Length: 345
Image (cartoon, rainbow, N blue to C red; front, top):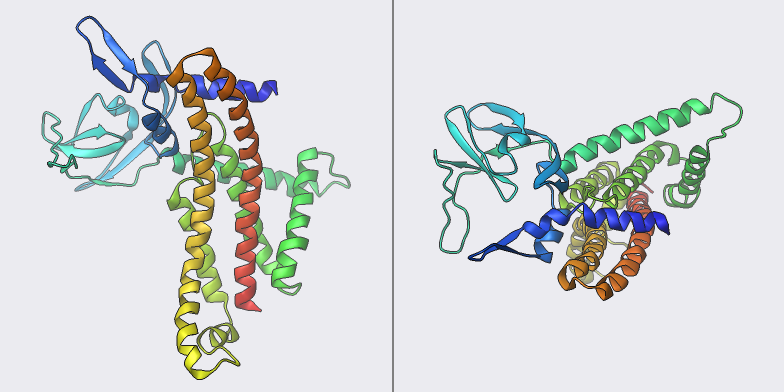
């Protein structure tokens, strides 16, 4: 319990800098108004730097590499922008960092907008190493390290590490309860590495997302869509003739009914990757938003009662998010195995 209280406190404290998001000018001083929407969106979206907290009016952050393609490749660190305060000149072009996007501007850094407030400045081709990309690469190294150590431990007669014993139990459970029932014993060895990689990769990224100031990796629809498209393409190219025959020529169905079923079957086939994508994205993002909403209550009401209500509910949501990390990885892997099984059997 004390551990989760510490996590909630750290999570809230690390984001006090967002209290300075809006400044209302008074004749004598500045009044600071907390914006919960700004606070929440800045946590669930991707960024070019990893912000931790504010200390002595300075952001403590981890700078990440920026790669811009604009008449040549330009590589530099995000710290060059100084959190959007600096105008950067590279190869006769001026760049400004505004609302976590890089815009090409004139020599004074002017941001041009239309009457609806949409920015009209040119956006250079940006394929930078953002916070989510950095953590995706980090999770690859984490998984590689753990499973290389796990495989080397089998050289000994007994595995004593409790983490390795837990991982072995999870692997056996996934094999016996998901892979073999859906794919069969003859093909489980071929697809088992894919499904295990998928499960543990989603699980590790889910766990990284609940760490205070951590990245919202699986809450990014680009990541979940990429994972679901991988499964869709593997299913598409692994499928047998009987699968397509059943799809386009359903057996034991009247001829006229086939014209209704065929477009429905094709539509269902195309919808599958999007249901996988949205299910994982929505569940992870919703958990973060609810947790951050409860933490925001402390800064909105600024009294003891808001703390009494916010902290217990934040702890409850945090515990629930830990369960959701495992549950969503399990559901994504189970459905992937089901779709593969339908295509190859």
